[in-house]
Length: 288
Image 1 (spheres, rainbow, N blue to C red):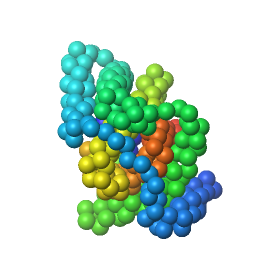
Image 2 (cartoon, rainbow, N blue to C red; image 1 turned 60 degrees about the vertical axis):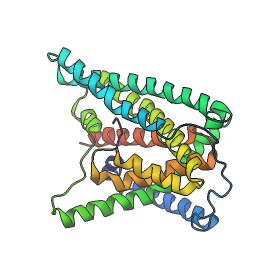
Image 3 (cartoon, rainbow, N blue to C red; image 1 turned 90 degrees about the horizontal axis):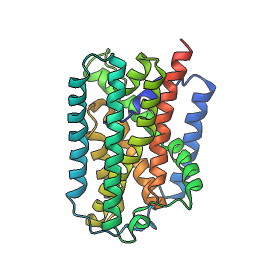
Image 4 (tube, rainbow, N blue to C red; image 1 turned 90 degrees about the vertical axis):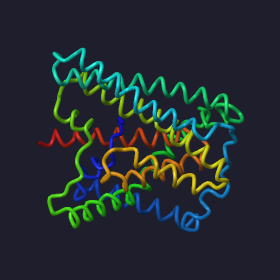
């Protein structure tokens, strides 16, 4: 819920342009270097430290269930009370509710981390001492995973055309469709804040911070925890055609968290991607 899907930026990016080619080539170079330095990824996380915690395994999933249920109910109630509002104003209300819910849920996650993680919030990975490094490394991480994400999306598209038919397409996420359909500045501002700031913070705190950390502590191995969390992150999104690309993106998010020990790094990657997706819509409209 609230996720800007990976399909939009790949679909809207013009790979015949200099910028599009540069993005892909830059990503291939960075990824190739990483693979060569880590024995094809086998040694990439060999020195990463597990985040010791005694959080019950079921707790993150209760938070996730509440995240899906409470905003949905609140939106339904709000819509019933504001039926006469213009459609775009209803979208604004929905995004405000979503943002408030995400902020409250983020507070819950932070509180759980403070209680159940060894070292409290620092042990969880919340710290601002290296925020500049996290910011720059997040951009590099996103660049490196981009060719793989593109490949996953293109394979999904080809598979869909093969099995479903030549008219198969990977559709645009609802939030981006709203951003494209309506030009009201207040609506666009709320969508940007929700999609590029608030939701990435909550989803990374929950999926990487809680779920991945708990799984790693239970399994005793890092990569299985990253893979399981990434798969779960993908399938909770409603559109199955988005799952392969989302899974690849989630692997990068999980790796960034384990490599750095900082939850800020996957938050930045997630936020960058959503912001770029929104920017792609604006660029597309300006070229029409």
